[in-house]
Length: 627
Image 1 (cartoon, rainbow, N blue to C red):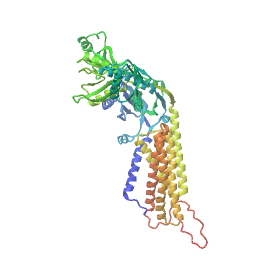
Image 2: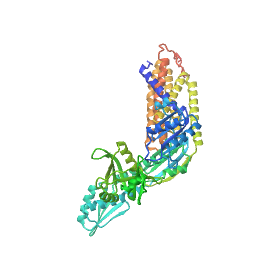
Image 3: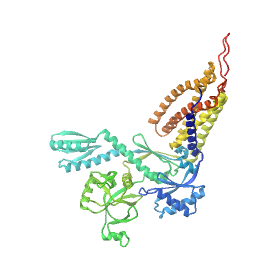
Image 4: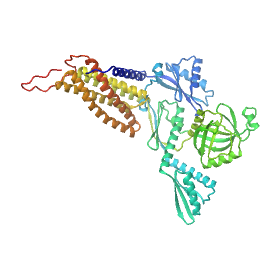
């Protein structure tokens, strides 16, 4: 009756092993490390950089625990802080030939001390949130009004181009807020323009206004298009912030949307607020200029002649020098979009879209310079670098492509760089907080102590009140905690103070399920059932109650997860996962222990579940057997 099939025990054993493996990294603490990340968005961090770092450490006679590529950075772990400092100097010297203009950011950091075999199993500790590790927190407000204004300005230019190309005369185009007004003197021309614009600009609602000789066509973005513009601006700003934060060499930064027009930036471990604000607020600009291919310029490129008047010397990606004219053809302000794709020969290419003003300029310049090269230069920190310098093959419009000797990945990277150069809409910091590392450590200690003491108090009460069944409940509670930490570690969740509070709450709820089971078993014993029947009936009947209570709590947790943000969402994640693991451990693991202990005993006369209070026997009746 109370026996589990072998596969259930095997399943629980596998769950236990997985729980142990993925919980272990959280127990080893952190070790000193050196983190290397790119100082420029044009420099990639890949496996080749790991090899260079390993070679630099080998040349310096330093033996790291390991060197591994993680995301957009390479981390090397060491045994003590002295070796860490030496390694940082050696790596900086090897990677940055010019310390004044470093190509890579080499920063001191902390990484988990967990053994390499655990890392090879992708068993990593949970990330610690800002409140546990210390750092800076920014809440940034995106100026959505400016984003819509920018879109309306671009729309104004597009209108002029469209009407001019189709030969439709108008009496002037102006902008009124986020609406565009086109004036006409003839109703026939207005109707003709309305048909054209509704067909070409489907995202805009066109409304005829006025009468007589003062006819107008008013255009405003449809509500759906306005939302799309705002969402695109928010995504663009978050992407740009990610690129900038990478320069700080921050591990596990949090950059996420909050509401419709705000972005939260949390940088754990960063204490220099001024430096963080400087980098987050940094601007990058993009310029398109013509390449000077004259004989003098070619000689200047190789260093055998001075740079011609009106030109500048830049370095192309890959290190080759290039002489570029000073006159700017187009800036990144005119770039609307950049997407990777393929050209007509199925070669990787980047498809660019510019606004109407940019389209007019690029059309005139390209018509006059077919066969010549145009350089796309990205300026950061006042320094420019040529991303690519393709040849112009024909007259260009508002949509054109750049292609050449590039791979599919390089095309995708170039498109990302072109898009990520600047913010889509201005942002202002409306909230700023700094949390010291000592406060974070204190929070960790207090949080861990609260969980440990809470677990110990509950375990002591269960063991004293329910005897052996209390021991089973305590083991199930420990199994639940093990699984919860393992799942959070596998998901690489970020643990914060609300998360620790949720763990403590989950422990209380998990023990509640065990109390229900134990009391059900007692009730069956009190009613005169045999021990084996009481165990079976107790677990079966308690399951429905446990399921009902946990499902309703889970619904509340999902609501918090769906509508909450920041700390509320962190609490909800741990809360929901804890409910699932507690149901598994309370019902299945606890019963497996009971079945293992009592299930094989055919003549079981009593169970150790504490005092079973029975109602007083009525006169003339016989007492029920004691449990």
